[in-house]
Length: 149
Image (spheres, rainbow, N blue to C red):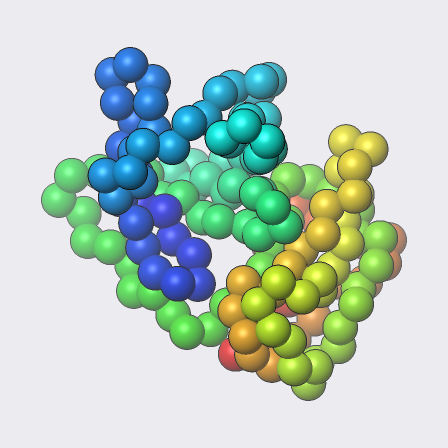
């Protein structure tokens, strides 16, 4: 599989014994419930899927994982970032508007799902070019909430 974020692409392998390897580095991951993982000793991740795509919500960032059959070419990585919901959720707050300059880690949108607040944070430094949601919207995984360039 290919893990893609704003910094690039990484090869993800699931070993026969269940260990997860990212570019050769073993990462401890334990399934807690369907769609919920413990990563390392304290991290929590939520996963949702559509077709061959997987989205992972971890520590305020959304990562896309693409299941890539052998021989298929990788998609190009863009310098333009779109942030989306990791699971179906309701928009609680939108902290930015088009034209806002943001830094990696800034909270852009706060979602609520499964009785939890999920901050969506900037994965890159840049300028917000579009906001595609407003408080009260029900959003789905994979649908862009904020565009950053």
